[in-house]
Image 1 (cartoon, rainbow, N blue to C red):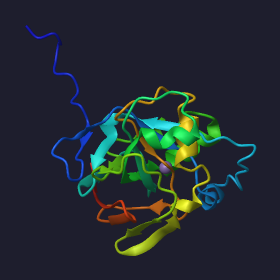
Image 2: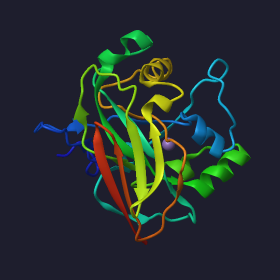
Image 3: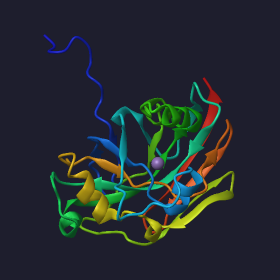
Image 4: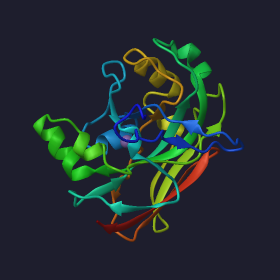
Length: 234
Ligand code: MN
């Protein structure tokens, strides 16, 4: 007799470059605003690191979507945005990690998209409501294969995105307000990080809408290239 009434949800996972075994996913964390120019374009002004702290939202692991596929234009929005991001893959459990030790928890990296219903996110922000309808969108956490770089901290490298070949986002990882070490330190004050957690580290400036038929391409130099095609609305 089966223990469950129906089949439990499948474990989400990503391929690992150069490995036959896959990287099983635990949680998906997202840093809210982590590039000055993007904070400015979102109306937040300049972030003063000495006074502000990073903030986070999460998406369900079921939103994870591999690079290279076509996703439907999602319901409930007329302003579906791309956000190109570096993704950190956590390889071992840790809690209250010091920035100086953060490298030891890194398994590798990937390139990702934090696809967003911007209209619903902004309404939620204005009304003091949760961001879930804007951010926790089905098929919205796009991610390439994981590239193993155990113990390595990426502190520079180009990050860029184009829509139908036209460059929309172009920045460098050195522009991050809170770098990889600081994010791992801060996030691990609130969560017991686990192997299989992914951290999307925030998007640079130049976010904007896509429409059915658009093709998104992007890359984090030295990590991976991604693509996503926007299909018709369901
Ligand atoms: Mn984002």
